[in-house]
Length: 135
Image 1 (cartoon, rainbow, N blue to C red):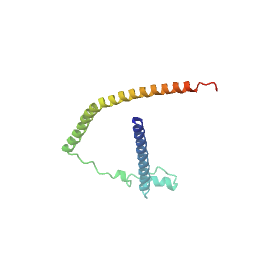
Image 2 (cartoon, rainbow, N blue to C red):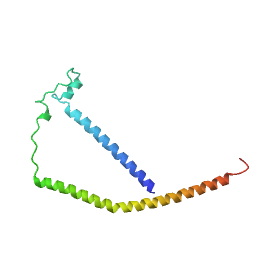
Image 3 (tube, rainbow, N blue to C red):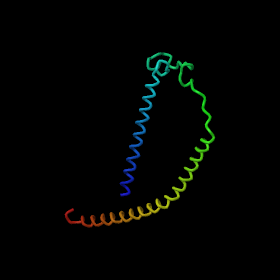
Image 4 (tube, helix red, strand yellow):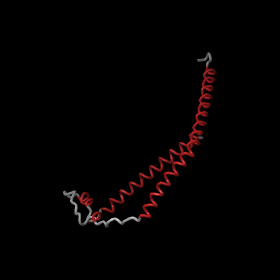
């Protein structure tokens, strides 16, 4: 049962990774489509012009940025507090779950040993039953 749950978790993780990859590909395609404007240097590569790296700094949107806004000290304090509270909560949760996981591992190891012993006995019995003169 535990093995089946682990397999299901692995499948879920793989599905999530595939979804993330698909989203990244879609974002890249959208960025390429958006950047294909008349002033974009990427468009020159698509048109087949020889000067691929022609770059007009004045007309490119990344150089027309506004200066950064000063963040309020209250917001900075709230962000750092949330980060520290998250770290403290994570440590407490880890300390709470660690003995439970160790107990589960111990029980699973005992079940595994019992299962292997039963398989060994079954194999010996099947070998003993297969010993006949007809071989």
